[in-house]
Every structure is written in structure tokens, then in C-alpha cells.
Length: 330
Image (cartoon, rainbow, N blue to C red; front, side, top):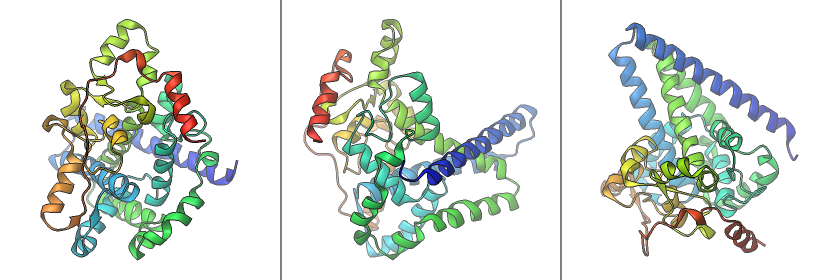
């Protein structure tokens, strides 16, 4: 392993983080059941969950990793700091580290031993990725130093210094927690952060579960197939899935539009993940609004044939598709 101490520290952080989240969930449920909650508690929870989730999708994912849009001069002063701080408050680590992992994920989608997010072929792997986001050997799979060396020249002062480890700790962790503690809403704030964090995890699990679903019994696979579909060919999209229209509005609302993950792997550099009005792509709606306000430009959109006939479930995650993907990386 390249960096065993950092690897161990990461897992300690994950364990402590989820312990705090679950403790907050228990406290929130207890207050709800006993009627001890206040309206401002609920407002803090809902605002935290929505703002952090959308900021993660827009700043970490679509901007920092894929550069699906760029900030104008005004946007760098007004929109970017807000999105950056809100994204870092989701406690997913520095944007550069997150982007390095996600870049590797797109390069090796669902290839065993190469993709830091998967593949997901069992309940154990499903729960592991859901709770920890990354596979156990992530330190061996991702050359974070190489990523930083390639991309560092493209970052400006704000992205190099403010969006680092110190920025995440001070701006994303310490200051928000102090403010929440001062107003006596710390538990509800923790619960909101935990909800945003876990719904990001849901994208990495449900969004890449085609082969996992294919291995289920026919009676269960049919029910899962009624909720998810694979619109684009798996040889370049891996096991990624889209939500069917019946749940697309809910999945898009909860994940800021990210649950239509098959679309994202088809058009990874697009600011727009949802395709239909019912997809509820909250991240795209925010980017569109910022574009109209003159705060972002060069907003990339989906191109080509956006919607095709869903692929038959028997072709989900086939061995041939994985082999073709592996051959393309040789």
C-alpha cells in the first residue's frame, strides 16, 4: 500500500463520521416522537440537506471534476465561494482529492481492481461502497499526486489554497458547527449533513448496480427493473443506471439530479444530467440560473441522441462488456 497511515486515518475518519451521523439520527427521531422539536430545527435540517447536496453536485462534481462550466469574473467572487464552502461542509474531503478519485472512476468504470467505486456485485460490496464511498485498496488504485501534478496549473489561488484540507476543516467543519452549536441546532445540522453525505453514497451504489440487480432472483429483479433502466450501452457506461420515470422525480430531488447516472456516464462533461422535466435535476437548474445571471459561462450540455430504448436486463454488466472496457485501457 502506498500510504498506509493515511489509509488508516481515512477509515478512522469514516467510522467517527458515521457514528456522529447515526447518533444525530437517533436524537432527531427521539425529538420527533416526543414532540420536543422546533420549527427552526426542521428548517435547519432541510436547508442543510438541500444546500449541501446541490453544492456537492454542482461544485465538486460538475465543476471541479468535469469542468462542465466555468465561472465568470463575477461568479468567481460571488457564486463560487458560496458553492465551495457549502460543498466542503458535506465533509467529503478536499475537492482535489474527490476529483482525483472520480476521474479514476470514469477511466475504469466498474472494472474490478481499478475502479475506486466498485464494481458492486454483492450485498457486502453494496454496503461497503454506501458507507465508505471507496473500495479498500483505493490508495493503490488512484495516483492522487499524479492527478494534482497534471491539474494544479489549471487551478487558481482560490482552488489551490481555500479548497484544500485546511479550508475543509475550518470553513466546512469548524465554523458551521460552531454556528449550529451557538443556535442550539447542532444535532439537526449533523443530521442534515449526514443525509446529504449518504445520498451521495446512494448515487455510487444504486447508480452502479446493474450487475448486482442482474444476479438477483427473477421475482426481485423484475421489481428492481421497474425502478431502474440502462438507457446507454454498458461497454462505456459500466453498470450505471437511470431511474425510470416513476421514481425519477423523487430520486432526482433527493440526489440533486445525480441518480440518472447512466446519462452522466454517457455525457460525463455535461452540466445537464437529467433529460426530461420529471428528472428533477436540481444541480442543472442551479447552473442554468447562474448562467442566466451571468455568473457562469461555457455551460456544456448533452449532445447527440439523448434518449434511446432501454437495454435488455440480460445484457446488464456482462463479462463481455467488462472485457471490452478493460481492453480499451490497455
